[in-house]
Image (cartoon, rainbow, N blue to C red):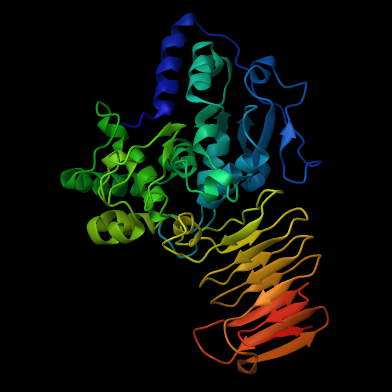
Length: 414
């Protein structure tokens, strides 16, 4: 099984239809999303019909100077999937202070806004192809990159928790950022991408499309992002709804064998130029806060456990939030976590680092790994500080909306 970058197909189809002659291109009007808590709205009636033909919702990521990177969304996407796409875009465009290429990404975002960069969220690849054949690309002035609903599991949904579907959101959103933001603003990064790609090809990296070597560094960085955040370290079991066979991904590889360093750890060991490059653009942790689905139940853990498949990727999160009023639990990791509960009964375990645990409404419990005598508890107003006297264990946690402290030997009511 080989990957086909459908944005290449979009470009080819656009060239094919260009021979039809010039016509006035339509654009997106200013769309008000202020009435929506999550920024996702139904596509307004005054939006040109060509957009209504394929999409029913709209969202955007803001850029400097009050401009936008657009998201047009088809009917098959859940709100949680849309929010995941928005989060990934915001993460990849978040400043990474002190880094060579990511210290200030405002110029990248502004260049994307200049070019009306737009993610188009189709239901399936077939829907994408049908839209391009019928003239979507030649009718608008948008610079588009696609992502499909069957390649974007949302944190906390059943697919994500079972680590079933390959998450293509980082790779495809990177392509939009690369084409319309990085290319115009970061020639030094483009040159470093080419050098790293070329060395990786000598080691076995198979860039695609094979006949377009000029595009291989772009695809290469998309692959690096996936592996830097360990999306393939535990192999997914489906690709765009199709089963991934047991022999489709060789041990230690990703992307069906085309890349030889299929995890963050293997990148550092086997592809040092990639390791150096990726850390010049994005931070090691994920900067966004997933809001879990309203019907989420059980425990969402960000502590890596080999027997829990999805934790290979959640270990790079720092923050997570429960929504709604169902009983559910959150477990942090060694980062300084922010764990936000909901209106149900929640158990919040920060783990290492100095964490913020907010239980919200309901009867909530904070968990600590040692006996009560090892901790100092300080209450100030509506917040509580729990300070672990043992180094390198639970750190100092700040609690709000938490009614009980569960230690290894007893539970204390606040």
